[in-house]
Image (cartoon, rainbow, N blue to C red; front, side, top):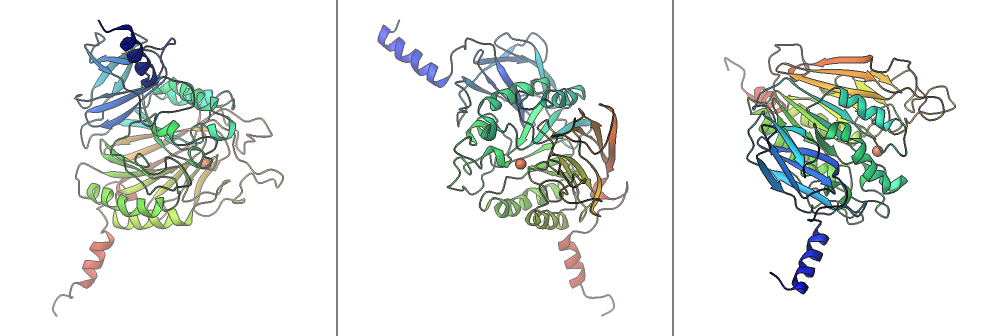
Length: 437
Ligand SMILES: [Fe+2]
């Protein structure tokens, strides 16, 4: 046995690293897809071990480690357990320290389909916004395989650090059994005196993590997990970073390689981008011309890119295809809507809607995407109603009813349409000498 002094040092070191059992059950539990055969589970408190298996016997186990960087919203302890060597397309049961049994699922085979995900941004915590819990419950009802949370996850930088922990508990309505795949919004990094990316990068292990150039004014920008990409069945999902200095230009150049690879991959039918800020929006935050340019160029070179998902404006809006890409703003995760007051038009971009806007609603909604081999089906469910003041609605709907639906086919065209030529192919064609010369 170790002498007492060594044992005290060992226990202190384990406490600092957060590796001992906490005095409270595991909470803030969520997991990410990290590859075809792996997931990573993150949580706070409880035991530092996850048991899992294809049956409820849970015959395998993995020790958690303290994540890097370490979140600071509360004392923790914060845990992260990487689980590798899994079978693809398989449902696993898991439990943290003998706690309740939940499930995670690995991605379908490459090229597979028949899966469902939701997208939401601008979420927050239920102690600050009354609709957060209802919006998360609506998503849970849809039993998605994963949820894209497109930035402004907690608002810890404007309402306090309690919101960070509250948010990660609120989403447990679905995040115990569906993957939580994030993108970063301005509220995660742009007021570094009140919050920074440690609370977010430290809570997620991301697939194919990529670094953007660091912006020295903002700690933890750069250095990894600024954006990432992953394949799920027949879709390549490509996240984009938030635009701290130089991040978008760098992304556009490097995303080109990630997309070009998907263009050449016969298992991939669709490319979907997701991030916080909109390229097109008639809500509180108008579309970003720089992002329109980057996405337009990427689409011209990579015709599998058909859908872009974002938040930032707290409303729901869908565009007609813009250069072949449908843009969906889903800034309705639960924090207050951002309606204009006084003018009679709640949309900062004006009334009636601009010609590119196919449908919009100043209302909380849940946005569901279902992917088949030859289509992406979007279904938008009415969320909790507002009541004047903040959250004034411009449509009336029964909670849970469908307010918008749309279908996107390969290349954004009708079913069965041939692949359009890429920009390069068109240029090569133009350079060919005409026959008979
Ligand atoms: Fe935002």
